[in-house]
Length: 491
Image (tube, rainbow, N blue to C red):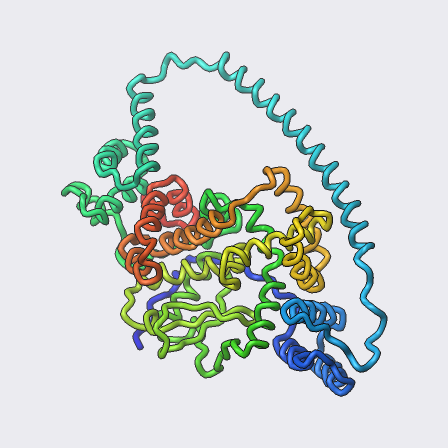
């Protein structure tokens, strides 16, 4: 226990929270009751009456509850190959999917017309830009520009290209630090000096620059990060946006199915109320840092629990809403900057675009969920028989829990996916999403040594590759712009 450290300045402005997994109005208690009722494959009249009473007492929406039941039942039947029956007449049979397919086709045609119009407009805009460029080339007199200044700009561009290719190129880094001396990019020059210092290659001038310019302790941003900054600046360049958009739509449905499967297999972790901590009031630094980090990243603070007997750092626990448990390695032995990196990394992993990676164990499962989501967006998606056998039951389990707006989003995402080539490397996307999470951690800690310490505990086998990406990110214009948006840039 220690005095609280992770606090925001009074000047800090917290923006709108974005990126959280959308859970709808489903209640954990009802989900548990229904899972128990269908455990033997039969829902008796007495069990149905108990479910009706529970729904009424909890004030739950009957339509939403029915969707939850359908999703849980579909997941159960897909897993066990057992059809669930009710002893009592539960009403009319489920409606055919034909109307949905017709609606899908009509909506798809409308979207295709919209895409065609936008493409035509894009060509018009491109033609207008070409005309504007031609006009600028004619009208602007470049004779007054200083040739030496042009040379400096060209030199800087070449140096930055080199470090993008190899962020550990010490000779180029020294040259870059020197070349930035007479520019107004003080914050970027500091980043170069910090990289050299971490590599152990900083000279006296570079060390002195870091000591003079780098603030001590935790960063003190004046604003939180917005959704646009996440997508344009923080997401790794190889993290294809359309893939994340698809996963973001279905991740809540996957969460419900995952909870159901874990409970059925007696593997669902129990969250003990006495182990829950509140970031705003706890004196545990590992707890306070998550509330601090979530506010800066524009994300709601996830429920936090401590597990001092576990040797892990941080672990996601499937629940409604999803929770995090802090293990012994997070609760003790970590510096404040290491905790800042740790919190930023794990909060970023909880975003709706990334969260499905925490729910399913491997690449094959990711592929099945992605194809199921695409098939919901376009029921006519061609699949070979072997893949179809895995994907169709999963899609049927997802559909009932999705709102109409969510299905519309999937239709739009499918068109975008096709427009962008209809191909995806989910292993590369998953790796890029992981690197995005580490970039969020580095943005909050501003410290390469802290990032190295945490990543060496989490995944030492890929430590060098991860650190290379973080070195390149710290040297990039994206990092500088993000710091500027947070009010951290050094003048």
